[in-house]
Image (tube, rainbow, N blue to C red; front, side, top):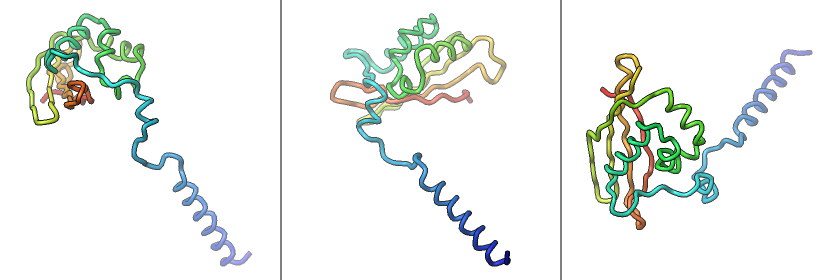
Length: 153
């Protein structure tokens, strides 16, 4: 076989591989209503309760290892990512010694509340964690939108 034919075949194979990779089913697209349905019902702060009091309730359940009750208070997005049993297994290994709301930032349509957690039995530098919870104003009250966790500075 001549060099030109081998090069031509190699180019065809590479081109095919590139197009096969580009036509993947994992293309990014905006969420649809069916994607939202997979999350289950949205989580709202009960009427006459502030987001801070809501979080105090969540972390009290966590501290008391009342996993079922704590799980119910999670944002819908978090419940869609892990089952109640997975939530329990993950958190069982991180006993909560104490917690405190350390920061609250409110805007017209949203609120960010940061909670400092102190965990038992963790090495120094990994025993304090900050969780920032995001709440969105909604016609039904405060929507528990999501949260992010990071090692405390």
